[in-house]
Every structure is written in structure tokens, then in C-alpha cells.
Amino acid sequence: MRLQIITLSFLLCSTLSWSQRKSDLLMEIQQLKTTIEQQNDSIRKLRSELLSKSALIETYSNDLRDMRETNTNLMNTMGKFTSESVANTMKVNSKLANINDIEKKAEQIRGLMLGIDSINISAAAGLNQTISAAQGLKIEEASLQFPIANLILEMSDSLALEPKLIAVNQVINTFKGYQLTITGNLDKLENGSDSIAFQLYDLFTNVYAIEPDRIQIAPSGNLNFTFIKLSPDFTNVYMLTKQILR
Image (cartoon, rainbow, N blue to C red; front, side, top):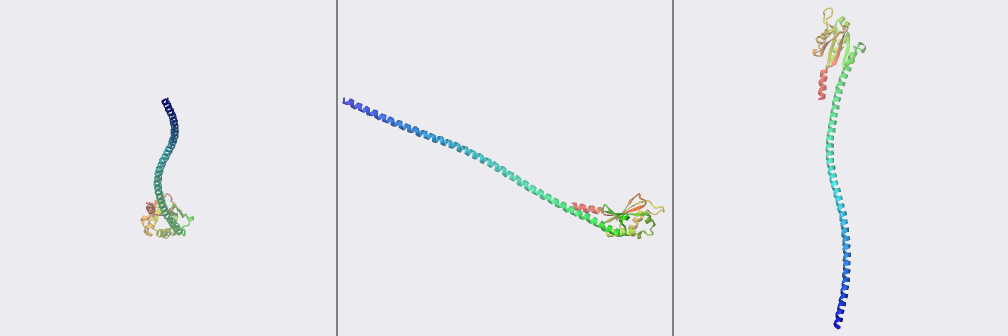
């Protein structure tokens, strides 16, 4: 009987102990579940944060790549712009130099033309003391021109003393660059003597001693007048202009 009581007591204690142990285990399991859930929540949060950070890192990487590409393009553009700016500056400087050179040459040519005009004006003033504009004196194509009536020359006792011819001789001797052109009828006169044009050529070369290469004779069908033309040596003007334009 005692043994049975002891056995029952043992079993009862064992049962109570196991129940307590079971209860403790269940509590520990519940705590572990809670801990695991908390850790899972933490892991999910960490994963979410990691994904966000990965996305942010990817965004930063893309932005950085774009910035590098933009910077490279900007540097290339700056390089091209600098090269083009230097080239354009050189072109502008070259054009300015050309413009300055053209202006300088134009000024020299203007000076040459003004010099010719000044000589013509001075020569016209000298001739005007003897030959007036009413008598046909005019400046045309950078030349002085006037007619002389053939009848007056034919009736003259001495061509060398004719005031108009003396005035022409003075101008030719004063302005060494002048050329003389005598334009008139080249046929002989009725008395068989040379035409007025040839007589004037002989006068200027042999009597007035003007160099023959400064005098030209040109034919004209006008029987009443012989035309005297004083003009600059256009060959010399051409050479001077060509020299300026080199």
C-alpha cells in the first residue's frame, strides 16, 4: 500500500513536473516565435532599406554617369568652341589686316588721282590765262582739251608766236608727266604744205624741243579745227597703280 502511495506520488509529481516543463517549453517557444517574428520584421525592414539604398545608389550612379558624360561633352564643346574662337579670331584679324591693306591702297590711289586732278587744275589755270572755257577749254577724262581753228593757224605769220601754242608749251615743260596729242586732218594743204597737225608736231618737237615720245598725232575728219589734248602719262599712272595694288 505504501509502495502504491509512493508510486502514485511520484507519478503525480512527475506529471506536475512535466506539465510545468511543458508549460515552460510552450512559453519559450512562444517567446522564440515572437523573437523570430521581430527578427523577420527587422530583416524585412533591412531588406527594404537595402533595396531603397540600392535604388538610390543606382540613381546616384546613373546621375554620376550622366554628369561625367555631360562633363565630357562640355569639355569637348569647350575645346571646339575654343578652337573655333581662335580660328575665327585669326580670320577676323586676317580680314581686318586685309581691310586695312585695302584702305591703305585705296588711300594711295586716291592720293594718286588727287595728284593728277591737282596737276590738271593747275595746268588749266595756266592755260586759262590764254585759252578760256568759252574758247573750248575743258577738262575731260583727266585731260585738258581745246580746239584751234585751222584758218587762224594757216593765216599765222609764225606758229611759234601763237599765244595758245606758247601756253601749251609752257604747260608741257612745267608738268613733265604730260603727254600731248594732236588730233586733226592729216591731208596736205591746198598749197602742198604739210597739214596743220604735222606742222604742229614739227613745231613742238623741233622748235619747242619737246621729246617726240611725249607727242602723238591722231587723224580726224574735221577740216576746220585741230584739237590739242594734254593728258597725264597713263602708262606711268598704270604702273604706279599696279605697284600700289601688289
